[in-house]
Image (tube, rainbow, N blue to C red; front, side, top):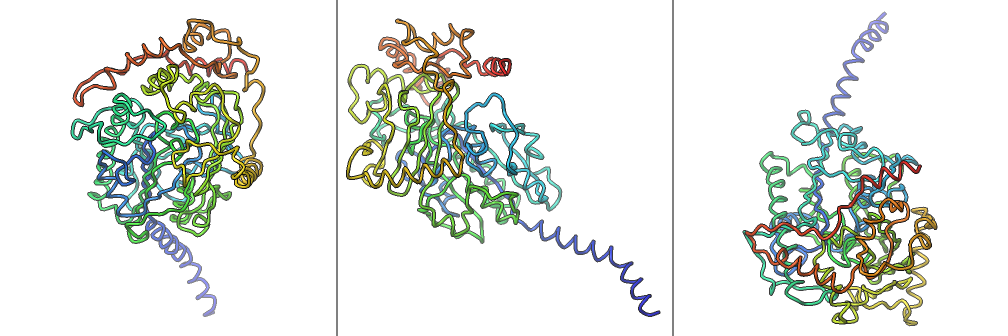
Length: 527
């Protein structure tokens, strides 16, 4: 009798006990850290906390002083949509089929891979994209499909948040900074650029734009402070890939894949650290999942920055494929001391036609003029050759700017063989790399040479309906303009490059508009 009454009492209290346990679990979950992931576009380690001369970025510097700054951090790809695809999943972009920049026909993720925001959403986090850009090469690819809302202020009381925000202004075009103009004599140029007032001004203009963005970063960090959220929020600051300059964006030199990375987690990550371990952008995914107690459905390619596996890393890997309709393929492996780049389409020049770069890079016009006149030194002129070597090997201790290719030096043969073996293994067993098709290489698609007197840009525009440039890419003729046409481009750029800090001058139009929507429609129609 007593047993029966106790049993009945237990059964009546069971739902209450379950509710209390559930409440306890939720309360515990609500104590999990918030995540704020700040991204700037098209920017390498050109910040005062990384030692860049002539500029001041006090807000990012302060953030670095409050956490850990990663000296050797790298993205998986040197352009936005492919690197963002990797950072949205924690996997190399080639593995998930998202490696072709501006993919026309996107496909859903496979093999159990899910977007990182979905993993946080399913774990009870409020997910927010607090800026416009998603830019991924897989489905789902819409802001409202990947994130719950637009601002952490819309979450439920006590609900932890995962928020991403991108500051786009470091993407060309660049605004000058009237609050702190930079004198061109105060900047330091990499040796692969000629030292002229034009080049110095273009470089300084980019640094000024970063100073403006630094204040935007400071404002979002102040908001965390004002709302009392800083102590329980992990903040990551990162670039989506390297700088939008020659030998930067779109290429696998450090200027294209080395990025700033800073992590702040009060009470968990010791302040004032500088890590010299090799880090990758996709490591952020593994780190924040671990911090939130979330298990990914399949192991990520990235490694948690909180664990020993990251500290023991010997190599990072990166890949470059299609950039708009500029077809090329490169793979890279980098250790602390060496980098090996395997150019899979060496017959193509580095400076083959790319409408974005010719319309955006003033320095590209000037260096083409100097190259055609024979005014560049050998290290600068190498990038303007009409083809590439199959392999580029750099001794980074002796040659941090990657200008002396030692791939054919017998004294580096053992190093080259070791790195190539590791790179080949990564291509085969990690990203499941595929060979380029004949259509992609387009060896017999176009006439042998650019018709005299034309720019490649004008020829493409005139022949837009005669070729499927999305399938075959743009022709790789080089040079893409005559000396006289490049000289005219420099004159067109000069007023814009040398504009005063408070002067408004529209960026000149040097190319036809990129018809990406027509290309997409044409590609779909063919399928």
